[in-house]
Length: 274
Image (cartoon, rainbow, N blue to C red):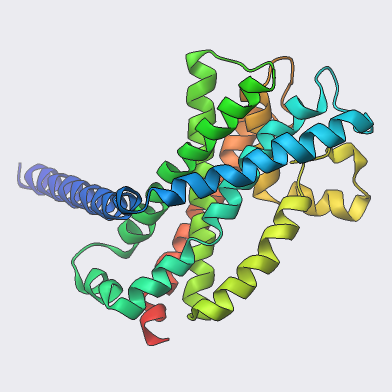
């Protein structure tokens, strides 16, 4: 009976620690999302970029009829790519808030708390995912106004929101990792600018993979954004199949998030030495 009691006690303790970590992760996410209530202008400015891409870039390219987009028009083809792009552009600069909190002394309080480091990283990833949902609502509204044939089933909508949150979590965690390495806002902003364009253009966001030269196609295959766009295209647009399969798309995002979380957790304390 004693070994069984010890095993039961150990299991209860593990569950207690897990529940505590989840609570701490949610607390970090809630504190971060709460900032939006104090800065609603941020939500408005985020609407501008996808609107410009869909209303100007998408409309102009649609008239050229140069892209082989299958059974749908170019605006329908590019709408999921613009959603993925807007999520990427917001998430990739997420690490600057970590540097800002370090400078204000907030991060030191997080690091001396009993919260596990991975809970701090995942809490920020979750808050970034919640922010990404606002981008999905904007792009859906614009796409509907432009006559894009959208899928509207609850399953598809849940899939879109899940992929948006996953994709945002992946790139925001990558951003935190970069912030832990560079440690200053000036360096971070420069590196962020360098990273966004290659990630975006070396994906299937605005043109099919079939148009890419071999070297670019090889880079796109290892780019997580490619799989995010593929899933969003399948879940958002009628008559558009998935190139890789939804299971593969979600698996790539989950594996990328786990790997980046592991690295960011190890490097997280280093930022206070900057």
